Every structure is written in C-alpha cells, then in structure tokens.
Image (cartoon, rainbow, N blue to C red; front, side, top):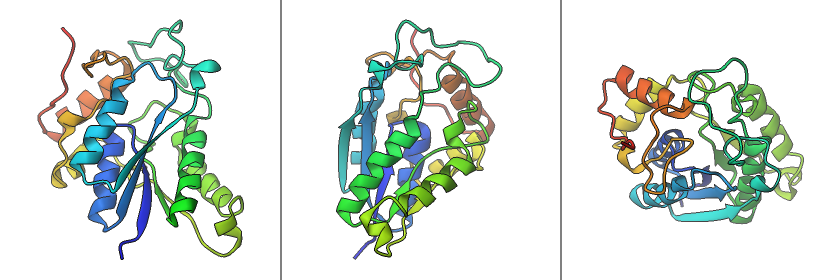
Length: 224
C-alpha cells in the first residue's frame, strides 16, 4: 500500500509543484485547500483543477474565517495590495496563516493515518513571510509530535517543505520536468473571478521572473 500524505494545496504555482513532487515519490496524496476569506478566491477553483489533473486521492476544503480578524491585504479589502516592492514584511502577510493551515492538515493526517505533511513554502524567492522559513517548519514538526495522540504514542510526523531552498526558476523547471500544467494555477493576490492576474503584485512579479529565468513559457492569463 502507498503511504498517505496530506498536501496543502492553494492552487498556486508552489503548492501545485509540491503535489506533483509528492505524487512522484509514490505517496497517495490527500490535498487540503483552505478558504480563509482571501480576496483571491479564484485560487480555490484552481486547487480543484490541480487536484483532478494530478490525481489526488481526495481534495478536502476547509474554512477558517481570517477575514473576520483582518490585518492583511489578502483578507481585508480596505487594505490595498501593494503593487511595488516594499521594505520589510509586506501587508500581504496573513497573521498565523501557515500555522493554522498546518494545524488543519495535521488533524486530518492523524485521522487518515498519514504521517507526512507537505507544504510549498519557499525562503529564497519569496515575500519575507516569517512562516515560510526553515525555523518555522522545524518548530511545527516538533509541535506535531508532542501535540497529537499519534505523536505521543510513538508515531513520527514529518513536515516536508521540498521547495524551501529552491529559486522560483528551479521550482518551475522541476514542475515542468514532472509535467505540471501551470496554466491551471492561480498565484495573483488580486486575481479576478476568472483567475486572471494583475501582473503587478509581489506574487505576480515573482512568478513572471521565475518563468523568464527558467526559460519556460509563462501561461498566466493577465487582465487587460
């Protein structure tokens, strides 16, 4: 029997690559998408497309109302998404997002009997978010193994972050090698309902630069 793994799947470029990587490593993949009040809800439809295309055993969608607390341009429409580079951690940072997402994935993994969790964080070509760094991944893995019934009974959870030290271009090259159709994905922080990108936000800039450096045609649909 294949080992089960839970893969956090946003519908974006990085998480899609991670799903393809986990599948290539022989895991039975259970994809988890989270509706958290994000303004770019088109990514949830993208997650459905990606899960189907990459043969996930199941796609589970969960909901966390982070828009109720706000504090981020991604969950509060009164805060503008920056369209130029900024110093420090940008206002697109969503407080505790990856901590909450991994907690949901951990709970589902324990129920499924899975001990491997995959997340597409990256600490090279990224926006500087604190929950995308190696220290966060290490700390959450330690937490997982003391906070769960499975963990205290001897099971060992592993948090896989295979893109952590890769450039965006290298991520795209790896995805291309695995046959990923990046035209299915949505990365833009303010994508419209059709998933068309603005071409100006931080996520769009990192994505476009990655395709250019990788020498791979960019399939991103942009708004006029």
